[in-house]
Image (cartoon, rainbow, N blue to C red; front, top):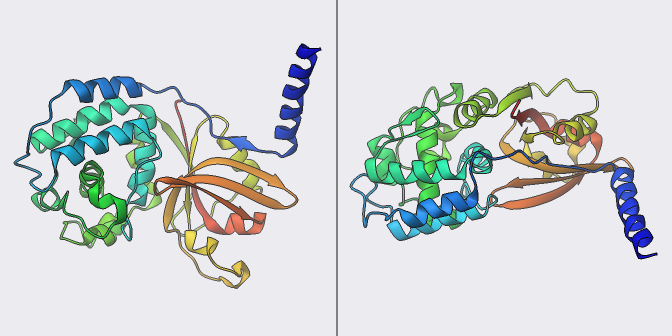
Length: 296
């Protein structure tokens, strides 16, 4: 009888899951583990200071690295910055290889340059001077490793949005210097991870997908899915009045379900999970790009 109840509950759960048409993010095996990353961090004595990153405090740097590898959702791109694409990239990097991230960051702190997955980084002097000194960015103010990481990525990777502002000046974390178009984001993923990227959409034209909900449900079953969206639309009270819009934000889609013509999404961005409910029409309206990341 106990066995029957056990399997009955399991079957009810499955029926509920399928009945709600809900799908969650797939698990992709990582190249290294959290424990390996922590062991390396504990075994490596961080220098008391860096001649390259003079405003980065070693204690805050180390604490930030530990947080990043133990909580994949912790990355916070900062208030009013254009770092959101690098936040989404960070999710993929930590999911795939937390040990390589810690090794890279320690080498970057100590040597002012480092290589990550065959990509060589040598940040500019202006970037190194600003890291650890960003202010009024929320919790990013005390996350010195993340300041280094985001600034270094933005300094290295360039797209057409960065054409007129390619060299960092204080405050450029809020400007087009740090902006990321869809093609640049996909290129960063390919360079920094072993993932293959299948992308639809663009910076100006929405994806030609008939049923966006079904398309996304299929994508997250076998990979990590990044959405390039206009998040300003989400906060509008009347979505039908919006005629012109452009994509502004990158998020990691974690789950999606559809019921009674209402689509419920849970996504990660800015250090937290967010749940939204929209109509299928609005869902199509907010999404400009979908990057599907898999190992094959």
